[in-house]
Length: 225
Length: 341
Image (cartoon, rainbow over all chains, first blue to last red; front, side, top):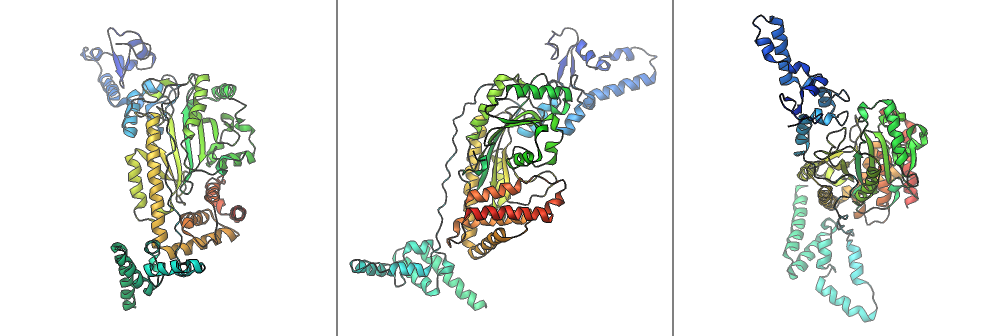
């Protein structure tokens, strides 16, 4: 095992602070020397003053919960500052607050493993903007327009065709397609009644029932007034 | 060349803009919150030396006059927050001719590379990646095999990539439970949605930002694919809701649509929220209006919406409601609508 700060091989003593492994020298340099004190220094001495024991216990409690005192040796950012701001001060902070950063990443993203591209390289993607088909503008079906279209004078040659169309579509000239697209609120009661017949003849039962419901609704509405 | 958001984009009835943003830091410097002024100057010089001046304009933020700041805010290179231009001596902004590609130095991270396009256009990713890789090849970038690209904001560490779609969702917003359902859907893709508003502001429009979240555990390709699937769903859902409202509540919708146009076209003074609401109704109903009396293109709607949303923040929020602000806003709207007809 090596010191994560200087890379030196660890032999006698391993100091692990907040999940980061340090050698004794680095721990001392980074101001963690109080954690290096051997408990036997105190416990082995039966005459150790009580305040010294109390002070050591306090330091141990700092070690246990003591993330608040953890400080980045390079930029001086404390763990408390990182926890409050969600930002680190330098690259070294990633080593110093390693555990906390990993925890934060897990909390936010459910993952802390890098899977992206390397510096200077392009990502392996050929994605194109996806096509989203657009709903066509629905023209307002005007009853007058529909009628006039059906009865439009197309000259003697087409007169027969117009008449045929009228027979197929009913007196009002409404076709099944036009009825399907129509805003039912715009149709008169007579048109609705006629439309029910046209739809039923064309075996468009769903459309016929919609027209019937609209007509029924109007009649009920009149009753309530 | 016209500014980027003046161009016609795909699916621009719903998507106002697509943005891709990559953040990077340079080795040897503390991150911005811990960078002293001397090092900051050195950082600005280092970046300035590698910026391709044949592509980018701009530079040191201290050289920007008031008009440039207003223009860059409208072009969405600067945020609307007044803090964007605090300590200009610690910042620099570079941007290309139509301002669709920019590099900000000292704004949150050392480098923020941003590409923007009107409407729905994921090609912004390739554009931002190209700009970022160029900088990566010239600078010593902070990178770790475990964490990826290192950033001061640990939520960005990893790919350092954010994809943002700015969308206008008047119909989903007006549909009961619409936004709640959409938020759930967006969460399933591990993305996020939030209303457009700056810190301390109440969201007063139907404009939302749909943003990628993950920078760890996913490749750039995966982020883009999820984003494309998600935005397609959002566009379809919004269009379906518009059709529902425009057909089932036709008379009411048509009435508000006409009134909204009248207000925008002829008002002498108009508040920000009133203008945004009116634009939102026009957006909702314009595809269903067959009277032919009102003709406003999606492009004009988007330009107006973005102009109003990105109005540079006044020193105090209240002064945005001053008579002069409201008059200036109404004049701008009238001018664009008049030109659009």
